[in-house]
Image (tube, rainbow, N blue to C red; front, side):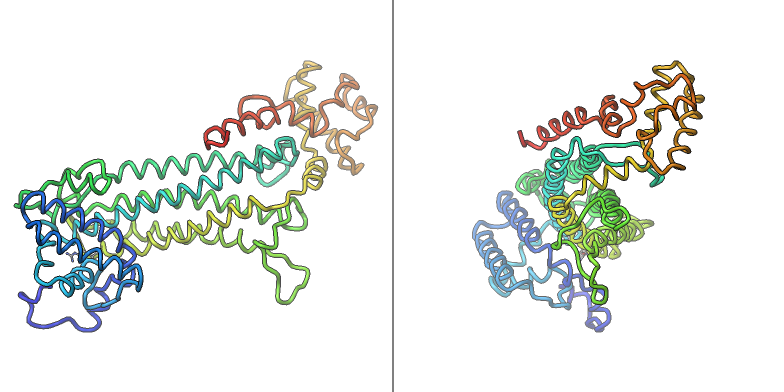
Length: 457
Ligand code: ARG
């Protein structure tokens, strides 16, 4: 493509380090769409004749058909998807092919292709996340009153409802989706027509190409247009945040599936056995979701490091922008699908959850609160009295609400029979009626709102 200036060809090492076709062939649909939009504009502006325009159009259609049927050929000497396609176009239609690259450069071309790809990727991730939200809300609705221990420091703290716990992840994904939507809005300006870096002397119409490609308008600065990869970083950062949430949920599933917890049984479909220990059922899918999140964060870091310190405008380092985005997208898509599948099919063990909540003195705060409310005792003193009750129950190996009333009265004479009503885990969760609290009534309300937001009712 630049034989005019060069007398020698590249060495094989140069060809290899220079080639992006092994990965950027993934942009072929966006590349053809971008070329067609550019071509239509060139014809409208009388820069390319309608006749040549027709030939190029048909050539691009033929190439798209070839790529769809046989894949994109990987010729390293042609470097990238833009040149592989241009060369094929020349083979098919002859010299008219050379008119397509008027008033553009591969610099604005690749920025445009990549933006279009990331925009589609955002839409795919959004669909996946919506499906995961539906799975979470569906399971939460079945368990608005299922009592489980709530933890802080991974120590049993207060009873909560399983529905409430699942809806916490729903909320995280609301934020994740809004982060992707925000990224989508920000990226939606077309770099096409910025040319190599300075714009073009041809009488182009960048509004036309922007519109045809579904952008809100053209980018405003040609230097920024070809050097900007914020959109890829926005995607990777949103992906990292999402992966982090998935990883935390995965970690909980792993802990809950462990025998000492026994809060869930993961279905066979998302578990593996051991080749040596016949009793094993390992939560591999959850572990890989957790593992993938680290790799996704690694992809984000890779592109941050690539872009850091690059002067304006385009530098070849930027060719390295695509592998981390593609990798992160593939990993994230799989992780979302695996997590949705697990949430849809996991078997919860409400009895085990309840027993653990009861055994963990999780209603101790309720006893202290009762002392404050019913006996007018200052909270710090109530905390101390309750601590004594917990110690006695622990010594006897019984739950707090199983302590005989005489024992409680002996700790503090202001305690009477009515305290029993607040010591059960059910009474505890039912009392937490503050907005956003764990009470089944509250959770039911949040589930209804979520279903509405998801278009489910
Ligand atoms: N393959 C290149 C990339 O992915 C396309 C842009 C090449 N531009 C250039 N001036 N060498 O970034």
